[in-house]
Each structure stands twice: as structure tokens, then as C-alpha cells.
Length: 277
Image (cartoon, rainbow, N blue to C red; front, side, top):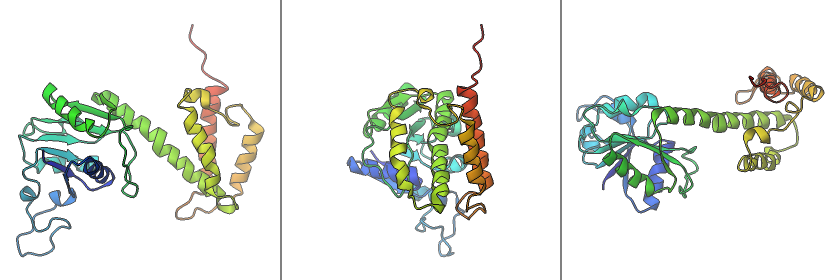
């Protein structure tokens, strides 16, 4: 089976690495040259990675095409690949299956629910959940078999569920990481390294393996300690880093985030909405 991974970003690079570790050869192809205008032979200024080949030649003859590219480029890239007998899969958490037109009757979704980086390649995928969908039973079986080479945690998910899973992941991962960035910024005018927060971060993450996030909530907002919260705001307002550096946060931004999140926690823990009779 010949597999092409379209897109050499974080997801594509990690998929290529994972399949190679399992002894499954894949061809990693940059997605951008596929939508770049073809330059006549000898015309110069070939798109990077095109190797002076036409689009058809570069992506011809594969059994499976996995599109690991940005959502906004997916339809355009899909449209330039003509392989009606192949299985076409995208890795997006939000794009629908109908991004593949009628010229691609065998199509589906292979969505690995994990945060990927090109700088830190993942070797063990067995614990990573994979959410799949396909146009028919045979396609779903083929997608399941492909996913099974990397992980044992495979689930069928429709568009509704996958969209909400993706949003949940943004809150649980992307926005949480933003909090880490703000925390690191707050410590810049101290002698305390960010590493001092890691045991706290690890402990909080470990707790939600055993209890509901609501029950794991702690802190001054959760207990309604207005004195401590007011003091925190004063400290942030008079931070040495009150002027926003290029990679940091202004005092106003930190205060706004602190107060908004604190108010939401208080609303849900100190003044919860009464249950309707």
C-alpha cells in the first residue's frame, strides 16, 4: 500500500514519523506547491519543494492520500489531486467529509486528538485517541485498519461530535497553554523560574484523571476570597512589566484575564444558578 501524506507541518511530519517507526513507508509531500502556479520547464522560479515536477507527477500513483494541511487550504489542495480509486482522508477536527467531491468516492476522516509539534515528534501513539468517519462501511473498515497500525483507541465520530471535541480541545489545551504563558510572564520580574510551577501543573492535570474538573477547582475565586483577589489585581497593576514587551503581556491584559476568569469561577462556585423546580 502506497501512502501519501500531503502537508509537512506538525501533523503531517508526526504522522510520517509514526508510520515509519511501524515500518510503513509513506511519502511526505509539501502541500503548498500543489496550489502554486506551474512554471514552464526552463522558466525558473520553481515553487520550493516542487522539484520541477508537475502537480500530477508529484502526487500520482498512491493508494491512500492523507491531507494534513490547514483547513483554509484543504478544498483547494483536494481539488488538484485526481485519484478516483484511492482512499482520501483529512485530519481536521472541523472540516466536513464533503470537502471531498464526487470525483473521490472513497473518502473519510482520520482525526488524531493530540497536540503536535514538528520540534517534538511523538514515538508512541497507542494512547492517542483517533476519531474516524467514512462514506461507507468498506471505507470505514479501511480507515479503521489504517488507524489501528498506530493506536488502539479508535472511535467513530460524526460531524457534530467532532466539532465539539475540537472546541473542547482548544479550551483544554490551547487556552490552558496561554495561561502558562501569562504565568511565565508574571514571574519575569522575580528570581523564580517557570519550572517552579511544573509540580502544580502536573498535580492539577493528574487530578482530573480521578475527579470531575468542577470538583478539582481550587483557589481564591473558588472560595470567594475577595481580599486575596483584590491584592492580586493591585500587584498586577503595578507590575514592573506594565508596558507590554513584544512577546509578553501588559498589566492591563493580565488584570483583564484574571478578573474575567475569577468572576466566572465565582459565578459557578459561589453563586451557582439555582436548579429549576
